Image 1 (cartoon, rainbow, N blue to C red):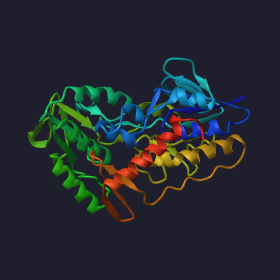
Image 2 (cartoon, rainbow, N blue to C red):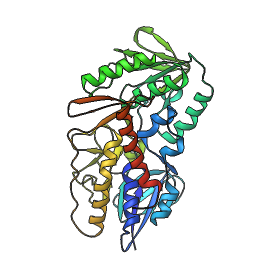
Image 3 (cartoon, one colour):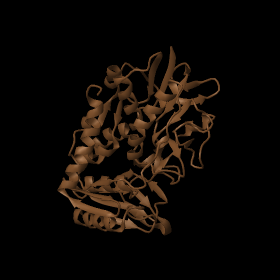
Image 4 (cartoon, rainbow, N blue to C red):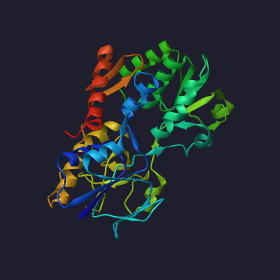
Length: 363
C-alpha cells in the first residue's frame, strides 16, 4: 500500500482526517505525525482564559480522532524532510518514508526580535504549553497584579480583555508602533479601544518593547513597565526546522505553496495553515487554515487518485469576530462593524459547530 503522511495536527489536517474517516482512500495507509496529542482550536482560547469554556472544550483529542478515522498516530517531532528520498526525519525514531506528504505544523512565536522575550515571556503558542502555565497564573492571581500582553492583534487584544475580566488584574496591552488591531476597520478599533478602557486595560501605543527582563517590559529611552507576567502575542515566525526541508521558503522562512497548496516545485508535497506562504501572503489567522482544510482534503484525494488538484481561492474579505470576554463580541465584514451579545452568540455557534465535527463520529 502507498503511504500518505500527515505532518502536524493543525486546523486543516483535522478536516483531512475527518474526510478520510468518512471515505477512506483505497490502496493507501495514512499516518499522522504530531508532537501534540491534543490539538487546540485557537478561536476558543480567549474564551478558555475568560472562563467561558472549559479547556477540554477547545481541544481536539487526536488519538480519538485518528482511531475513529482509521489513521495511525505517531507522537513525535519532525526535524527535517528529504523531498528527493521522500523521507521525514524525526526527533525520536527512524525516518518515515512517504508517497504523499502534507504539512500543517503551524508557526512558532516570534520572540527572536526582542532580547529576553524567549526567556521571560509566555508565548501564546504552542497552546498546549500555554494552558498549564496560564492555569498557574490564574490560580495565583491577585487583584491589581500587573500583567502585560505584548502584541495588539486580535489574539493579544482578546487575551488582554479576558485576563482583565477574570483576574481583576492591572493589564497593559502593549500595541507598539503598529497600534491597536492593525488592518482592522477604524470603527472596530474605536469600539475595542472603548471596551479596553471600560475593562481598565491600559493601552500603550507608539513604542515597541525592546527588551524583556524578569518582571519588566523595557522600552526605548529607558522606560520600563512592571509586569509580573508577560504574555507574548507579537506575531508568528517560521519554525527553524523548516530550513532542513530542501523546500522553497519565503523571506520569513515559511514554505512557499502554489494555488493548489502544493509545495513549490514538489507536486507530491502539500502545506497548509500558518506553515505555508500562499500567494502574496495571507495573515497568520486560523480562519484560513480552517478554510483550506476542505480544499486540502479534496486535493490530496485527487493527487492520490491521479487527478488534477483544484486551486484554493481565499476570500477578499471575511468575517472577523473578536470576543470581549464578557459574553459580548464585536464583528466586522465588508465595511460593517457590529457589537453586542448576539455577535458573541454567533461566534460561539461557529466555534462549537467547528469543534463538533472533530469531537464526535465522522460525518
